[in-house]
Length: 316
Ligand SMILES: [Zn+2]
Ligand SMILES: [Zn+2]
Image (cartoon, rainbow, N blue to C red; front, top):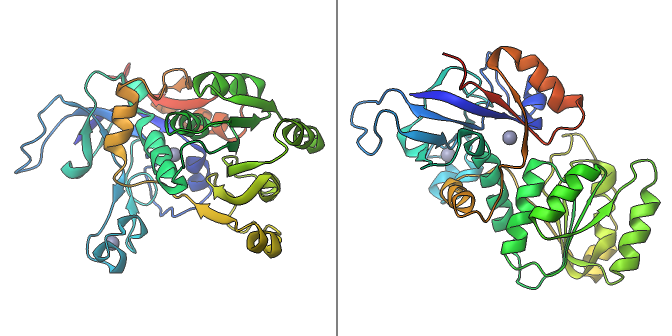
C-alpha cells in the first residue's frame, strides 16, 4: 500500500472522465503516481516501509494468448490502475509489489513524470531509431518533450520540433537540443512552407505527438523514401484520415503505433536519475487533491500549462 505524494494529470484522464478509453466505473482515476510504502503484504521482502516509490500502473494477466506469447502489452485482460482499476488520485493506493519501483532521491514531482517517461521510452522502442536519422515531431506536450530528449540521446541527427505554443516549443527545443518551427493554428501553410524550405528532402521519421487528426494526416508528406510515420499522440477513436497507398508503396513507408508502456519503468527512472531526461522543468501546475476538477479543467482547456500534477504532500 502506497501513501500517494504526487499523481500526474494527463489528457487520458480527461478522456476517462468522459467515459472513453478503457475506463470502467466506479473508478478512482490517476495512473501516474508516486509516494511512500505505507504497508506491505505478506511475503513482500524487497520493499521496506517508508521507501519512496513510483508504480508501474499496468497489470497484466500472464495467462492470456498474448501474455503467453511474451507480448504482455497486448494482454487481453489489460488492467491499468487509474484507467479500469483504482488509481492514484487518492490518499492511498494498492499495487502489486512487482510493479513498485524505488526512486532513490528523485523528488516526488519528478517521480510523477516517470510513467509518462516510460511511455516515451516505449515510444523510442517502437520507433527503433537508426543513429543519424533525421526526425520531425509535431507537438510538445509533456510526453513529447520527454520523447524529444530521448531521441536526441538515441542518435537523431536533425531533430525538428513543431508546435503552436512558443513557450513549450522553446523549452522542448532547449532540452532536446532541437531545431524548432512555430506553428500557426490558423495557417498551416506557414509551417509547411518553412519545413520544406529548411528540409527539402524530408525526414526518416515523422512523429505525431499531438493526436490532432489534421496534423497526423499531413505527416506522410514529410516522410522521405523508406520513412516511418509514428502515431504517438492519441487521436479520437472514431477519427479517419485519408492516405495515398501509392506513397506507402512507392516510398516504402512504415506506419508505427505506440501505445502506453509496460516494462519500461526501470529505464525511465534511470534516464531521469542520470539527468539525460529533464522532467523537472516540465511540471508547471500543482493542485491539491480536493481541487481535482480544477486540475482536470486545466488539462482539458486551460492555458499556459505543460504538466499538471496533483500534489498531496502538504495534506496530512
Ligand atoms: Zn498519462
Ligand atoms: Zn494477459
